[in-house]
Image 1 (cartoon, rainbow, N blue to C red):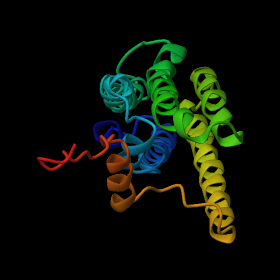
Image 2 (tube, rainbow, N blue to C red):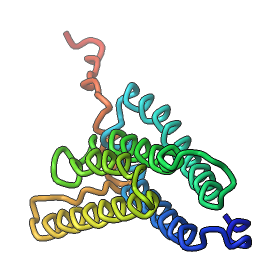
Image 3 (spheres, one colour):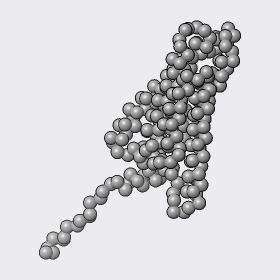
Image 4 (tube, rainbow, N blue to C red):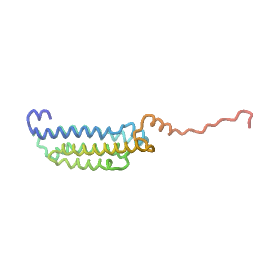
Length: 203
């Protein structure tokens, strides 16, 4: 992308691509780290089978994140006139990895925990909108605006739940700390009732 800027090819389109790409990267970071992994592993993924899905599902998250960077570079090459790739195909290189990332994060980190709500339903809807953005004149900008809106919605939902939990003494916070995790682990241990043998000579 820097080389394309130096050659002054499509500076406006490249600036829009850089801005949209930056928004997408920050949004991907926030959506993934909005809830600590140890909290999810201590609550929703305590079963061995679920942890297997969690571990191998991250291959899609890491691969789609890496492909997003490659897609942005490929689109910049197209904008700079370095290739004759169709615009829709170049746009798909930007939007498809992001859509895969959103669906995988939704399946592994959101759907298991939130159990309904507008923020949870918005993830697959935004993923579809991101896919459709491949045909837009500036796919990175459109996709960036969509995921930015998703971040705002998710942040507002989390803030509302935190305020409700703080205002209601009967509702505990959603974040599970280390002490709560240890207590939950201890609670899983089934202790056999203690038995004492009768003293010798006592029948």
